[in-house]
Image 1 (tube, rainbow, N blue to C red):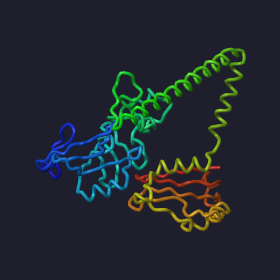
Image 2 (image 1 turned 30 degrees about the vertical axis):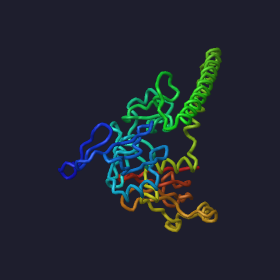
Image 3 (image 1 turned 180 degrees about the vertical axis):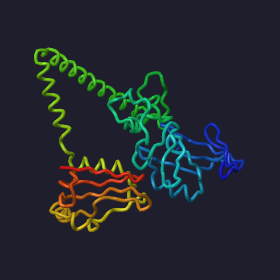
Image 4 (image 1 turned 90 degrees about the vertical axis):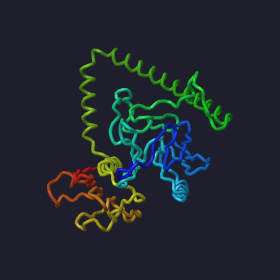
Length: 311
């Protein structure tokens, strides 16, 4: 429905609009690659980068044809309202700007070694996720008993052979890792007499690691993730070097300018979120501990501000 008026009826493999049938042609990942009307005319073509961003030449072609199909990557609906640029994966939204989900995987305990926000275990070429809850290997690729349907048989078989080789390599690496863990465990259990001493040393090392300040790159990544400012191509705006207060400028700031730095961060001109670097400490500006070293000021869309210092 559009404005309380029936716009189209979705059916298996396509939709009906204005009395005309439109059919989806999908690839092995479930992506809608072409839309064809009942007369056999292609009204939309879609090519994607691995994580779902649509290639620019398709957008120009589809705009010219007047196609308004919204179900694209993974067969999911693309929501561009308000500049969101997200796909509705049923259980949670998938953000094309940051190529991850907005909320954690509800079954993250099954894969504790990987971030619960990544799409398809960070492997969208060989895996698919139909509902945003759990991804799995592409049916037919390296799985016995499941047919594979490539556009070209020779190319398809070559892909299958390659995936099998990669799979065997991964199995070898995993087996070696398990063996190494067993050796490590045996060494740990053999030193029971020194258990308390080792535990104390381990706790001290862990505490020392926690006390270590972030590097500039780590602090910058944390600031970006907190602010979630759109890229320039999506409306984000750079914060120029000369916008920093003169009282906050020091030798690090001057060194950045000498090295050709053009900006200190980025802001959303249509919202509250922004992040900005203060490369020099300025303890005379107050008693806050972050004034003793370089740091990033980061504000999210809700107006919540955090400071991320670095060494």
